[in-house]
Length: 253
Image (cartoon, rainbow, N blue to C red; front, side):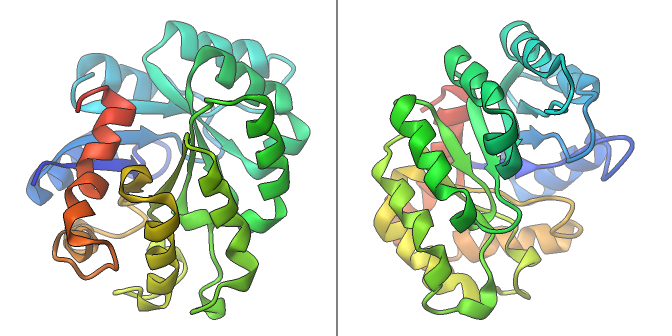
């Protein structure tokens, strides 16, 4: 199966260099990957260089300091003139720097959305933005950062599924290791409901490498999906494991 990792990190000041990324995805049989800038790093040169050298293999997601006076112009330059297809925006930027969201939407970039305290606190603001900017593509990362202690009902996470009403909102099955121990069974009810509400075409698998661990951990996490252990319909596995991300990030069906 041709898998695409829709969310992983690489870098020189934190995490692992791209050489380690390549060794890991090659050993796991993953053909393409989306390199997402890690929090606190606003120099996007390293990822830009990787994507420029191998655009058919890697897509890039940049990050800007939303508190800087030049944030909007920096973002527009990165997305318009550079190799980046998306930008990582956090929940606080939706409140503190909405101009960045508008700029990304205007350019047609993919917004990779991180809500560290859970999706509930920012879902209303996100819906308001999407109402004003129909067609803006947003990827909600890490299952919206759930609290696994709320399994199986996830009452506080209902706002996540309201976002499924927007056809350009995608949900990423990633970062599960941050909320539960392998094989992450506490999160299965949430994933099952996500499959029902978002549908097969709007779910993306991402490893969150190297937070997930080394090669063995990477393969174990991927094989939960490929082996049918996650509550994803069998006929949807290939789409979630690769086809959806290839279309969204590389324009390849």
